[in-house]
Length: 217
Image (cartoon, rainbow, N blue to C red; front, side):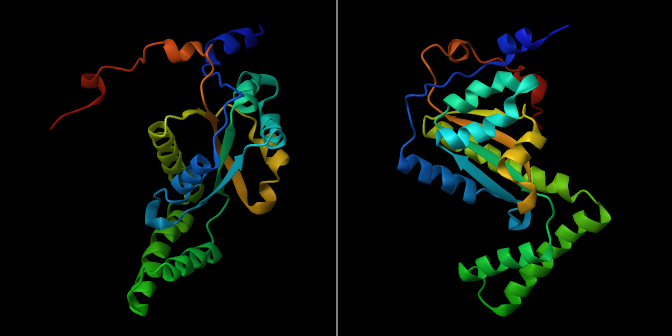
């Protein structure tokens, strides 16, 4: 049974206007949202790819062929697309790079504070690397904090966003050469302005009632 027509009807929930583009000031704000996203121990285990050219979006759209074709138009018609990537590993060199940047930015009053920060962060990172052995999962949770910042931030800027997990990660890896840079793709976000015929924009939001998802103590 071919379920593609059903998927196209059911999950094509965002239509962008390809004629409306984000400007340079907006893009600078978006980059700031991503860079300043919070992460556990400020580990920043991420990399963001921002595509605004037709060629760049086409490369990302290679990951939406076949089964994931219902997401292709969202990427191609968006003004810009962000690929949020997670580091494949969090090693000592990355930790030292973060520490050096914190030092440069004036985070430490003295050398002992710098050393204390490094010891504390290394403790938690190594716990996930060696004891819990869930470092990739832990790092990806930090990337999803950046996703939340991005979605909330662009909403405040009155920019539409569509987070996309329906893509071929292997194809995206090959299209962008992610593995050679020690990265894995986690989620794609299409950004822009909704088209006049975006049917989903006219529908009421539907969520479970507050009493069923919130416990008040």
